[in-house]
Length: 194
Length: 285
Image (tube, rainbow over all chains, first blue to last red; front, side):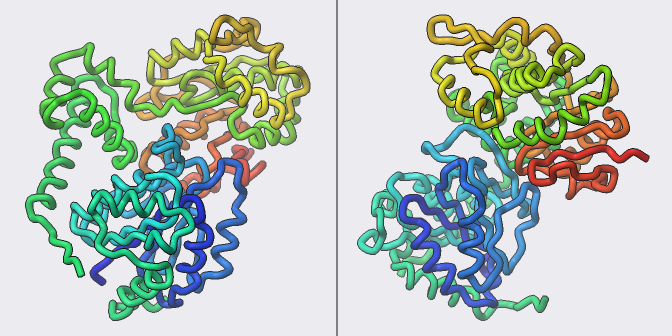
């Protein structure tokens, strides 16, 4: 399979956009997906459970040092940055907020780009700030594919607009088209029978 | 449709940068004895690259030269390597659980020894001191607060914090089951607060490095929160072994919200007192 991971970032309005994409994923979607949804500190895991119910593949909160595996969607836990190691495992951090956010999309995307290089797809969805622009730039610089949600379809256009403005976006798509794109990339690879 | 082009130069430059990073970490170890080789590499890279950006060196190798030959520079940047983001009564539900599950156990000992490993600037140590006072355990307790960073230890010893955080700390204190008034425990001065000196009476602040140092005493409770996440699995196992060896039988270990003994090789030595809050007990046999 050419692409080894999908990283996705969303802020305000993200629950709706992510739900639409997750509910459209095929049950044999084999590329690991890692998501940062800006979320308040005191959240319990109801969002994880909510996404897990509507998605055909397992959605779980990322654990420190956990191996990133196909057939899973991983969510960054509230109040921790989520980093990806070159060994394709997660590391958590309680460092200062980046772009006023923890988890920060830039932190995930930048470390993902370092680990996966050109085998990475980065997706920026709705949001009211510009977290993720630097990360998308790095993904594109290393040869990965970058997708922004079409601002005219986003609940909050600021985040996708900021990343499009930086000139580092390959595709501008609606959430429906994003789902279709991801499914089409996943098909035609070598399946691992569980 | 746009085609992404992999630039050979860029791929090579990623790898070369990683070589430089590895050499820099090695240089720090050889020169100063601080071992960051088994820290989360993604984390160290971010800290080092940020320092590179603000320091004005052209590349990591130039900065490495400065690190080797300029002591002062190194000790100025050493704090980069620890994460010192903390707060009083951080994760209030954790402290609530300590009151519910741990305090009754501690009350069975005539004297208790508590180790805060990786105490940073001390907020969580003073939080525990306050909790012990309110539960009537403080006078029979000796607290050891350790960190590898002397500068941050000094801050912890001073117990002076910005007043801007007080509102949040007060809220945390209340949610953590505080049965008095948080303002009883500090004195306001200009734009800072100074923790009550009586809180410091039974606390010893000392230098200790979880990567290189060993057991220094037998503990009833070890608190190490949001430190292990910065280590590789291998180093986490080393630290957990150190904690195991430092605990009396039936002693307790409390980790951070997203940390666990359960992935470690030593998991079976621990029984869960409150798995969700990451509080474990060293099995008795």
